[in-house]
Amino acid sequence: MKLLAFETATEACSVALYLDGEVIERYEVAPRLHAEYALPWAEELLADAGIKRSQLDAIAVSRGPGAFTGVRLAIALAQGIALALHKPVVAVSTLMAIAAAVPPPLRRQGSSKPPQAAEGEGLRDHSESFRAQTQPPPSLPLPSQGEGHKQRILAAIDARMGEVYVGAFERNGDELIAISTEVVAAPDKVVLPDDQRGWHAVGTGFSAANGALQSHLGSQLLSVDASILPHAADVARLAVAAYARGGALAPERVEPAYLRNNVALTLEEQKAFRASK
Image (tube, rainbow, N blue to C red; front, side, top):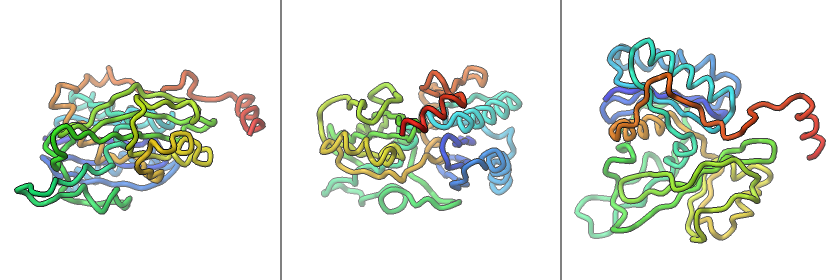
């Protein structure tokens, strides 16, 4: 399968090309430069791989939540390219893409196959660009976790205005799935789906408001990495899995996941918020 993926929902900008199990990505933390980078990077990736746009099977996009302008940009790019090519779009949750950065557990001792780790040591190195053989999409075989083992992941993005975007996910065997509705809330209002401990916490939401979300959830968290930003490479892998399950959409049916009713503040609201801090 050949798939082009866009991710511009946060301060990071990335574009990835999925080619039959291999992922090529361009990535850079570049606030306010997404519109300048995204499309040229896509053209560079296609040219470097010797792939024409017409050879793509689908376009993938990070649908949010995240920055309004960034989410809107990625969806507009994906829809425009897909409409021109008469190809479908696969929309992926930005929070799920962040959750996918958590490496699955290693294979248990006694396995007939050697242990494997997710790409890199621990959570990925945020290099500007890379070309590498990567692990399969989350719906395909991953390192064995043992019967009934479930890895729980809480992804959070700093939503500004004293709030965070939050989504809970579970890696059960070979699959990464959402186990809660994604919400925007004040850190101290976030409630986990259950009272179990052992959650892997990732994303900038855990450093927002002086780490209020991490403090609120406390001992329920097994690990925390607030530096993780979404990658188009993970969007691509998740999109391939969703495509196989029939999750592709006609371009005009793709909707952003803003979560907030009001995606922009008036000048008066901005002043009031700053004065309240």
